[in-house]
Length: 371
Image (cartoon, rainbow, N blue to C red; front, side, top):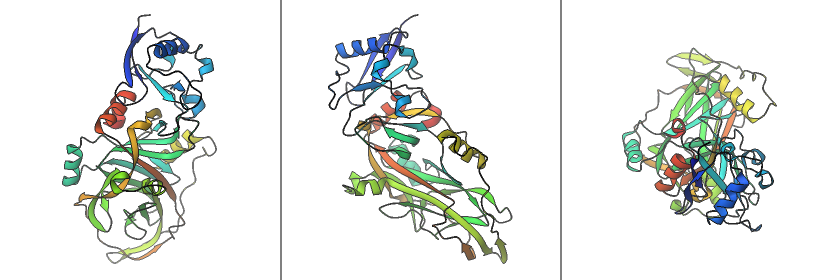
């Protein structure tokens, strides 16, 4: 078999990628010998450096599935771990700071009876102009995210990574009785939408799923912009609270509009029988229950730790989004009786160049996900 041109990655800084010609059937142990003798990979020191190969086409972000144990490298051919453009990805299994992250690329985040999608704002003129100026990529949405280092404890159900200063839209698709209310709020900082601010009304189609787009803050006509925590002088434990944004919905059981009363006390339909069958079954089940959702994409995605920094939402440029006419005599559940609660952690790329290397290098060629 002829040799392949293989792009090897160990990070996003200068010198962290290198092109090699390899026999695709070469065992990973021999690949390691070559990369180490060339000085591309440092040898293990069993303290804070031990690079491992990532199975770039794994459908699982569990460590035992996504990382190749060094003890079996003599059994695994190179072609078994390459990405779709012959990328060879490595990660420091002992990193103590800024570990690499691996997760499953997705179009939607789900929890029970609500789905959330983050996209670039392409409706507001000033938001669109900002995104064009910074050459923003489509936000990367990852779920079941884990650090690749055994020295860093953490798991994030949902992670969204943006080019810094991206102006975004939250799309919510939730189940409602007569309708539903929703909130979008970081754990620290100004709420994008507080409980009771806005309502999704189902009118003559109660007990159904309905989507809503949130391009701005509910209390002021400003877009939603994702910035770094450091740009806001946020430090210490406040960083995690800034980057953690929770979206949740709860039922409206009655309201009046235009002289007509709408009411329903129904509860959401039961799931379709995949409970207990694991992560993929759970999100597939949630997607199947909702309307107008894209098929979820099960693809492992790697985000080098040196490419990102914690981020979160702030009020951005002016928004022209308007609200529908008001409703009255609203009867709604307490927000504590949520129908679904999606928690999202935001990160931003440290530079556009690093974003480009992660999206079009590490994780190419899935342009349908990011472009």
